[in-house]
Image (cartoon, rainbow, N blue to C red; front, side):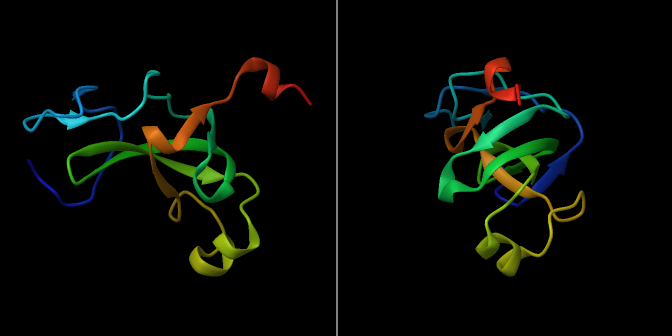
Length: 104
């Protein structure tokens, strides 16, 4: 299993079996969000973000996302969010945004 960071434009084959050693692992109970979907990055209170791609690291599949309004510390540490400066978040760190949450 390749442990290097690698970006993907489509969802690569994966499993939800976190004990697997021969496949990429997705660490959430819900499906991998589609590009363009809104998610909530719960870790470090980063907040809502838009999925812009996929990436793998250390055998896990994650989503590349652009935070809509990241906390000031995130911008200081990472710079403004953009397609080139998107954040990697794994399934266990995010939640899908429900249609109720999308309403203004």
